[in-house]
Image (cartoon, rainbow, N blue to C red; front, side):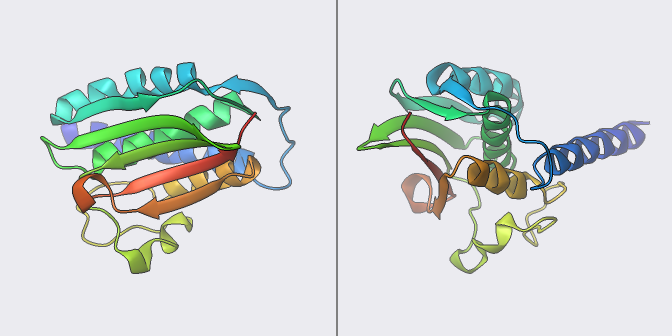
Length: 181
């Protein structure tokens, strides 16, 4: 029965990811942008993912926050950040750490999610944005759509995504750089 429940949960997640991806296709009707205050959005998504982190024994926290806003689609930004946090938690071993930060730099807003998990080898960092791409040997379940969705949402917001080493030069740091609002 437990295996059936897990299979159903994975199927539901896959369908949700596919629906999100189809909504982000170029031919889909664009949604109007509004001024999005990022600090409350970051805190909301952090709270939503706290139980998942707690269940895995991961220290999930907001290490730096500045007031910042951009023109964008709040729902899609929430999905993007949720996917980044979910991936960081998923690929960080129990007892690990996932840190978020929101800061401004010149005319940009930087949203960072970093962890001390397994990371992504430098040679695979461009491929992880491909649909259905999965890092071999990770031992984690997933659809391979999470980072493809992140990339599509960032592209819609004319944001740049940078991948680097994470906490203490292990894991992964994902920085999404937006033009300030």
